[in-house]
Amino acid sequence: MEKQRVATLTMDDGRTIELPILSGTLGPDVLDIHNIGKLGLFTYDPAFFATASCTSAITYIDGDAGLLYYRGYPIEQLAEKSDFLEVCYLLLNGELPSAAQKAEFSGFITKHTMVHDQLARFFNGFRRDAHPMAVMVGVVGALSAFYHDSLDINNSQHREISAHRLLAKVPTLAAMAYKYNVGEPFMYPKNKFGYVENFLYMMFGTPTEEYVPNPVLVRALERIFILHADHEQNASTSTVRLAGSSGANPFACVASGIAALWGPAHGGANEAALKMLEEIGDVSRVKDYVQGVKDKKYKLMGFGHRVYKNMDPRAAVMRQTCYEVLKELKLESNKLFELAMELEKTALSDPYFIERKLYPNVDFYSGIVLRAIGIPTSMFTVIFAVARTIGWVSQWNEMIADADHKIGRPRQLYRGAVKRDFVPVNKRR
Image (cartoon, rainbow, N blue to C red):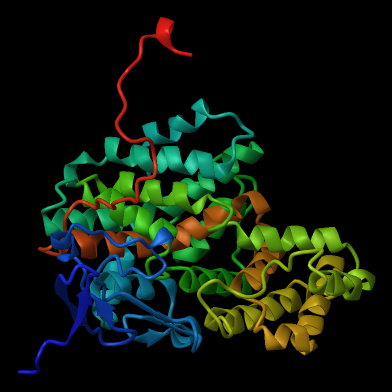
């Protein structure tokens, strides 16, 4: 048996402690510091930049090499060859399904896309102009009030049922949030449609006309869902795990993930990229804007990535999809999209951006695609939430199934007042 590798921490008073070095199948080794409290110490790592908060076998990212794997499968292969529900099965179960398993799984999800009729009445309590993400936080959290027959988180079958229900019903609720916002009647799902087709039908269908899905747009949105299905221990996923560590039900946990995703630093990047394009306004201003970025006058949104220090592996897939959609809808001459393509061309050929590896990321292209499909910017983060639901429930399920899981309890470096005695108000100066 291979000897356990350790790192030794020596204090200035001579005390020492051995910290085991743990290795994963991929990625950097980690120091096991959970016994460091024996020295009366905690570690300090703001925002957990250098902390592995859990053990997981779902998603692997190598930001330097530009790699993203779901259960070991490169994201490029899944986006090209798979469909979203097959990827969902993979994330939940660890393996790609057989033909029979895929058919059974898809059939189950399709037959559970309806929501309780009383849940639909919840929408009447919101203002029509409420942000769709505010609505989603409320209605997804409320699912636990309707499906309390599967809330025993220690029962693996209950966890599976809840995961399937979330996967099936979140797109329905998302489409209802959109319809409510624009004042159109809800479109209930149809079992004849596939998962993504159904979502587009519920978004854009009306009772007055037959809706015929455009296969190019369906495939484009399918890729967006696949590319955003999971992304390791990001802010919203960590939120879901932390909420779930307390024993909270999965619907509440996913609602907490939606709330975290709503933050503009997390889920709003594609909307920010589009706003930037609108601010530039015209192709003739691209060179001046790029120079302004170099001069630190402007920010270049949709370029570079906090995790990926090389090309975002999702961006190449989304770039091709972007061109397919623009060609299908004959939008190559659209002013906004011409501007986006000129900015992309300029940045990809400029040494300033090449040296800094500021390549267009997935958000730059996905925003363009969503706009072309007809999805308003207020719904962009909702689309992200629909896609990421499978990642959240997979991560939550993995955590609950881990026999070693405990309630999350980060510590702190306290810099407040030391002990002081209370002084009555009439004696205070």
